[in-house]
Every structure is written in structure tokens, then in C-alpha cells.
Length: 213
Image (cartoon, rainbow, N blue to C red; front, side, top):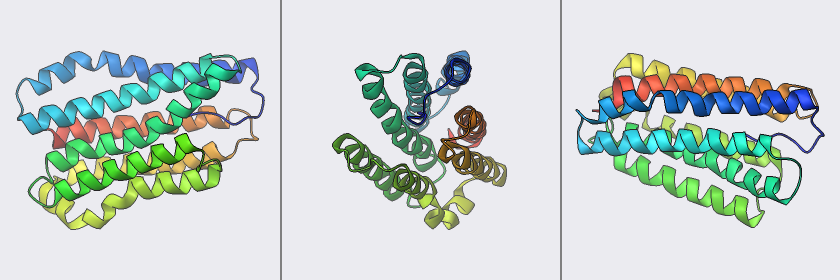
């Protein structure tokens, strides 16, 4: 969830770091609940729950580190991890859905597709092929919403409230891109973080309330 190369004010840097750190604290606070959930679900549920949880923790940890570091080589390296973590979170969010409600409705295909796309996205980031923010944003959105092609399996295997939480979370993430792209506006990146937090909460409700079995 990195910011632009526009120089941040100290207040912006603090806001960006703190908002990302809130995500880390929220994830850690949910760990006892996660342990309770995985103690009573199938092996598919255990795998899905842990993959989702770890992908969330990775995203917010890398974002917190990126925004906390001063400009320099280490910050540039962590920024790459931060960007890559977005792909991991997208695939990590799909994992409990595809191994749970969609497992008997073509879920394995979507599972494989998401992780292949995530791996390709990360490879492009590492190689420098995705240097332009606008192209990166388009690819993020495509990878995130490719599940729409599985709309019917979702309708069959997922309770409607769970689908609603998934969609609302997706709208949070996608709507926040408007602020992510507004790199020239002060605190736009902080607002983007708030949208991401909202999306994560919605998807956590969908995953642990309706997908993990």
C-alpha cells in the first residue's frame, strides 16, 4: 500500500504508518478467534483460514515497514514487497472461498488461476515490468474481480450474506484506488489505507463467517 514519490510531510508519514499498523494490530487481535475457528473446521478450512490470515498480516506488516522507513535503498526494497503483498492478499482472500464454498463447483480452477496470476504479477513487479502505476492498478483490479466469471458457482455454494460481504469488500478496495491514484493530493494515501482496512474487515467477515468450514 505504498505512497507515491511525492515528498510526504511528517504528519502524512505518521498517518500512513499508523493506519497500516492498525491493520497489523487488528490481525494480531484476531489470532485467538482464528485459533478457535480452525480447531473445529475441515482441513480445507484450516488451510484457507491460515492463508487468508497470513496474507493479511503480510500486507499490513510490509506497508507499516515501508511507511516507517526513511527514504533510501531499504525503503525501495520494502516497497517492492509492499506491492507484491497486494497480489498475495488477493489470492489469499480467494483461497478460503475456493477451498470452501466453491470447492465442489469449480473452485480449484479459480484457486489455481488466482495464484498463477499473483505469481505473474509479482514476477512483473520484481522485473520492473510494472513500473507505471496506472497499469498496475488495472492489473490489480482484474486479478481481484476475475472471480466474477465464477458468479454462478458462488451463488450455488456461498450464502447470500457472505456474497454481499465479499462484494462490499471488493467495492471498498476498488473505490479506494481513486485515492491511491491521487498521488498529488495530501492525505489521499491515508484515505486509501482506510478503504483497504474497510475491505479487509468485510472480507474477514465473509471468510470466517461464511466460507471457512
